[in-house]
Length: 323
Image (tube, rainbow, N blue to C red; front, side, top):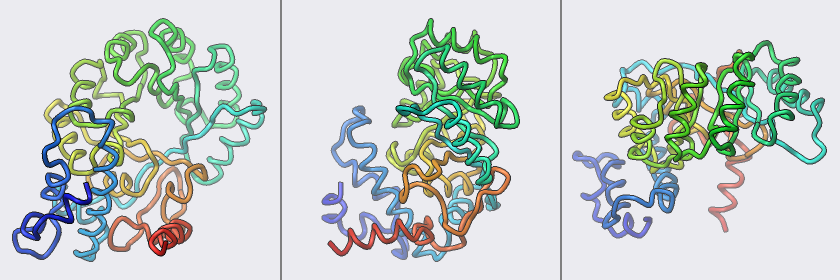
């Protein structure tokens, strides 16, 4: 992808007035002679370069990316803060219910209002773990569960029956992301909120989920991650498709917990963004000096995506650049 960009002429990637990079032209350059399909093999490569391009575009304009996105592609009034939830609750050797409770409470103490834990090992074990979690979170609406695609349909239905009385924030990715029939059928058994889509890597895959997955625009959430899915250029195509199918951008809460999605969420008015407190540092997380308050985080007022507001990340990037 990089050689295709470097070998291009300036008129192939600059805006019409020559004052900035054109992300859409650059996206087309990266995908020169690429045929459709096979989205998992190159979507992250394009998404990574696309992120760098948008950072540069916003810095050339001397604006935070979320403000640039709102001015160019939104309503000109970006959100000044974004809902974020804390993802964790992993299975680990020797991790008992008390340790799970301590972990989830630590996220609440950081300022998050919604926390997420993993399920899918066994129904009986997970019911016990969920009930332990509910002793430290305010209510079921403050707890989401994520099966990471582990369940077949009969098991997913059993989990749905078990989960329903708890009125959870959502039931995430019960089956394989591409098993649209499972997701569609499950929606007839589980009337509360579900979420999926983090492992779909293109607008076409997202469209198939909307067409065939039984997702409900009045209650379910979509978790497409621009960094995994050809970047923001593709994400805007996905948002356009969703609007054409009666979905609000507010039903999108991207997977990943990174600053690019945070800027998109604020600039294009998504429903929020995932967060992994302390797990994927220094790449995950948000600006060092922007704390989580009542489940929301503000964006730094610096040009670009805001990488420079994370000291540990900048040390890594500078070390790489110097090597």
